[in-house]
Length: 91
Image 1 (cartoon, rainbow, N blue to C red):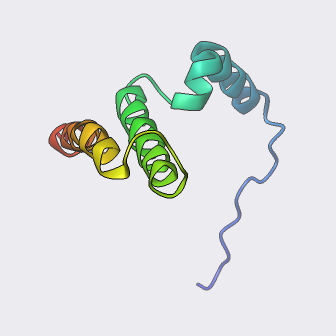
Image 2: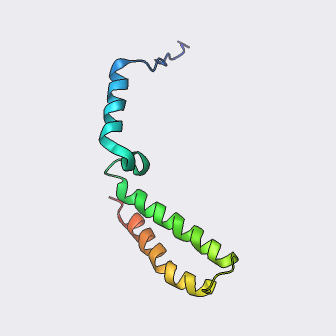
C-alpha cells in the first residue's frame, strides 16, 4: 500500500506546449506582466502601492524640494484608495 505517486515530469507533451503558447499569445506583453484579465486590476493596484511606497521612502531619505511629510500627505490617500479597492473587491 505504500506506493509512490508517479507524476509526468516530461514537459514535452504537445498538448501542454500548445496550450502554453496559446496563453502566451493571448496575454501579450502586458498580460505576461500583469497576469490574467481577471486579476489585472488587482495587479495594477499592487504595482501602484509598491511604487508609491518606494517613492515615499526615497523622498523621506533623499534631499528633495518637497518635505517628506507633505509628500506622504499627497501619496497617502492614493495608497489607502488602492488598499480599499484590493480588500473591498473580495467576492
